[in-house]
Length: 369
Image (cartoon, rainbow, N blue to C red; front, side):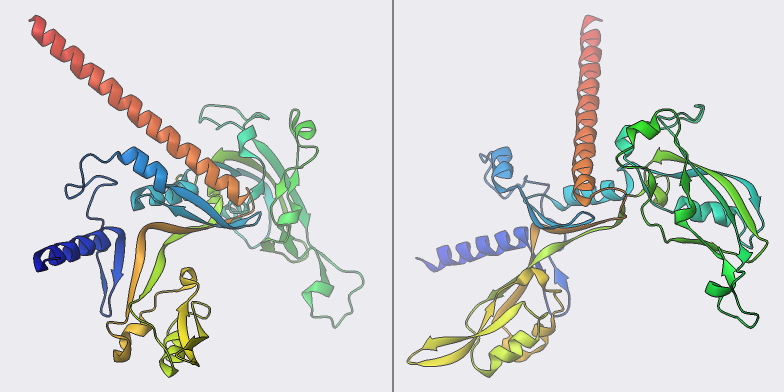
């Protein structure tokens, strides 16, 4: 192979690496932004079927799934798509939350506005798919509203000693908790939710601390909404992603350097194994689990590892973590976000089609005149 061909091949490999990887350097991060629109680039072959290429590369891998916590890999998409799904999970998947609070009596030290705000942030276990969005001019019905009531009073405990100072023993009902929210079924809600009664997700959320003689009597109405309007409707405690780390060893690291190399990474990323080389066992560093690496760049501080290791992140491999507030299963939150994104794409295509038809009619009318 000629020097020119070798240099050309090296440049092509470098360009491909910059296109598909985020480069982690000692003093910073390079190649952060994508050098192309998703699956379109002037420096790639024009005869490639990008749809087939996308289908071939795209995949979703479930790494860990619990009822309210899930980790999965989204592979083969642009950052714009990954971020769209993240934002939809946070702000556009609908849930039920307390929207209106009617306060009949509140003699506690908690102001009415603060009390209403605290109630709104209590996650409510109710399937939002069974309810409609309540319009501004619409009256409450069993299809758009859930009703809760609280009637709570703090009193002295008759069993408390005269010198008692512990509020737990001195008072009865001094902590108003979310378990005091009593669901009042309307219409046929009681029959519909007989197997899964509507309730707060957690029964021990503190709403107010009270003292003898103080009373709270309220009625709270839950409505369907989305996190874009208020955070209380967001179904996730957190929805985040990070790029898959990649650790490239350009040559083997052996001996005492292997232990030093392993110490530069999060525990479990690199393991030191005994390898049989030239009739003897020597220690050798092996990258075993790069996904748990936090990419601290500690290894790049040591001169002995220069030109031996390269740190990158895979540009189209996203590690998602979704933690539900308990209102919905984490898996359902993700699936709902995908359906919402699909609906957005369909609306966009319909709007573009409508606009193109309008332009075509305008051209036809101009041709007539």
